[in-house]
Length: 172
Image (tube, rainbow, N blue to C red; front, side, top):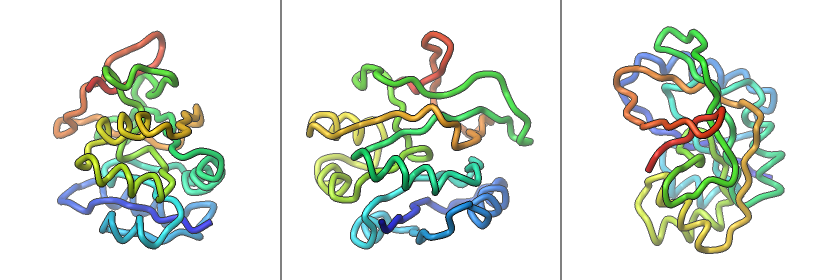
């Protein structure tokens, strides 16, 4: 299985944390892409990650394991502040209404490239639109409760979180 890891590089003081985490993955058999179309064309699966977050060392390993089983897999995340300190709460809840909420983000999700190619022909690169289109296409979508990412909450982070039960999801 060929895994492409896609991220966007932007002016971010947290990049060194992300870079160090990706340098020490338990499975280093992946290729990093800064162009999404190149990743889709070159890899069997594309793992989305964000440079202001910190992936766990088994992020790539879990992406391959679950990517081999499903078209799309979102992963649970813990929250950290801008200093990297743990915050209360956990992200992700399976089975949410994708018309109202999203758990398949651009920092915690692995996609089968053949599906992602079809989805990107229909929608812009917005995680909630991508997830809804995948659902419409009948994709096998899963959510894994393994906390694979430390999701950084800080002033420039604009995602709107809502609490459903004891877990958080993004509101669309």
